[in-house]
Image 1 (cartoon, rainbow, N blue to C red):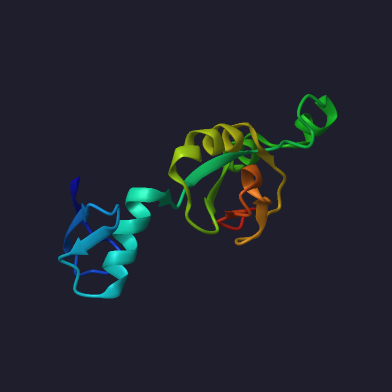
Image 2 (image 1 turned 30 degrees about the horizontal axis):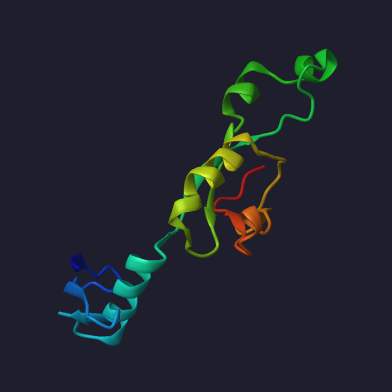
Length: 136
């Protein structure tokens, strides 16, 4: 099996060629540093991606007429509706759709600070999902 990849771990963008030998070993060539070989192995055997998305903002007084009446029209228009988030580390690529489904149903309470954990141990992977912007 021969696979061609472009390394993305640094700006050099080495063109990698990964080939399996008869013993099942993976030989990587074309890399100018050891990170290229590690990238090729990970990309072929256990690909991971940093996941970015947005989550809904929970409205503490949704449906409460006294609270809704207190807000002015301009405040309602200026209020953030979604919080941008990202994973704290690269996430298993095959589980990304499952994570996105969970994030899209999640509601985050305001205020939230940049770097706050909005979903701890996402899907049991040990990877947290963090807010990437402070919102009030």
